[in-house]
Amino acid sequence: VQLQASGGGLVQPGGSLRLSCAASGSIFSPNLMGWYRQAPGKSRELVAVISSSGVLNYAEFAKGRFTVSRDNAKNTVYLQMNSLKPEDTAVYYCYLRTGQPNWGQGTQVTVSS
Image (tube, rainbow, N blue to C red; front, side, top):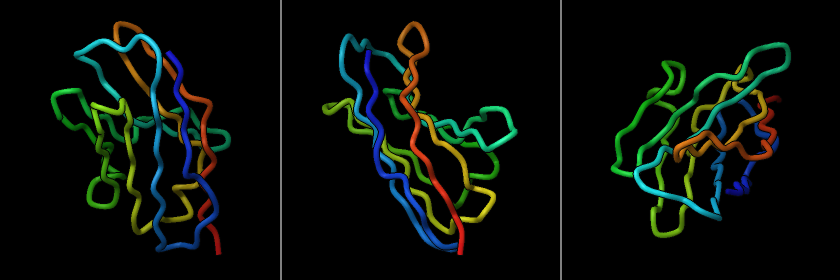
């Protein structure tokens, strides 16, 4: 399984970004796709995940600001991030669990004025 993430970058506080991650290879259903993040000096943490049947799970900090979605036909997961804060600055990792966990290469999100 390979995961290719895109969409990170530099944004001002209050701005928005949309991350995308396309999965390829042997992908079985049911599965779980989503996003984790890791800030400098901190552990990797859950942002949001969505199952192949549409069940959602968000971290508390993501609720109301971030939206995870997926296109099962394209094996792609998205993360729409609104009202971004400096503390959202981190490397965001795409995640797919289909039997075992798989990780993308990470995409940097920097929120700064």
